[in-house]
Length: 155
Image 1 (cartoon, rainbow, N blue to C red):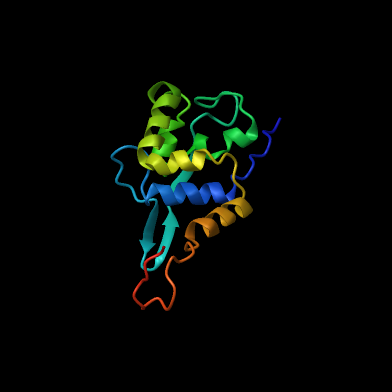
Image 2: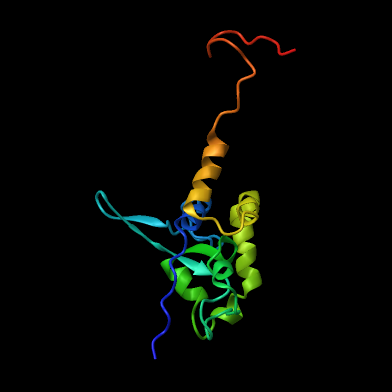
């Protein structure tokens, strides 16, 4: 019997995790960079996306969740390879690293940014693109004239 294939985590969700990681593993006090230079000019990922609640029955911290929730931003964190293996160790992972602990790491690393992204729910690439465009589009100027002219008071 073969396991069902794992679904790909949405690119937008992966991008959010990478952005909020600041290039570091979510494991507290870990100094392992998530991208490493293996030889001059050649870089490799040193990270995996980890699930707070495991993907399959028998996995550490497994809970039967709908796929969108299981692979959603709120259930994921980014860990270096050694720490990902540690938290998912079949013998000690669940006991040493309960879901509440992993969630606290996530909350501490992401701060208010994580809460804002979590409130969005499942985000696909189009939705993320629309949100980024809206966030980075300058507001209409309250000033008239060229950008270098002196601002006029708005009545």
